[in-house]
Length: 250
Ligand code: 1GP
Image (tube, rainbow, N blue to C red; front, side):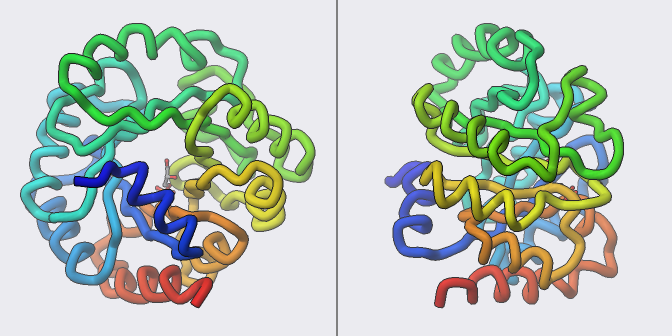
């Protein structure tokens, strides 16, 4: 069986783009999550991230089990803290908040999580998590007590992504923050994709099909949306999001 990382790099190599849905265990009712995940799977979503900042371990465990039950696509932990590591996921984004200078989110939480990841035999994907200024204070910024990268300075973003690569990280997540007012700029995605060559995940504040496709066109291998699809009326847009992201590069 191939790993989740192979699934992502294979897409990157073939110039294909993937659409992942973020499930925040703090937000949703059990039935709503099952329905959303089933609808997403039917409509072409390629994978799921499960995580959030203000959630309990129990909620994460419950959500991962629920999502796993409702889909055959990869289910990947997107942890806000070490206690969010649970065994049932297919992989974990082993995130280091490289845009910040808070040692706890650069390496501290990781020390607590590592033995647990080993014991659960989870696939850990070393990921540089780069928070990008998005027009307002986001939960990640507040909780991590770090400053985001300036959105208009490509050199700073590229330097962080290159540092991630030279440190041996395997993925870069350009994050505007959940519910962000402005998503990560296309220009920044292009600059990082062209100079760093690691697969990119891009998310935060994506509410429109065209905007989501633009992120793929700019160089995101994986485009992530969460908040938008927590509204029932957005469900009918799932197919459009998936199709327009998949259409990029073809
Ligand atoms: C947040 O990138 C994800 O970590 C998705 O953000 O909920 O705003 O889509 P949204």
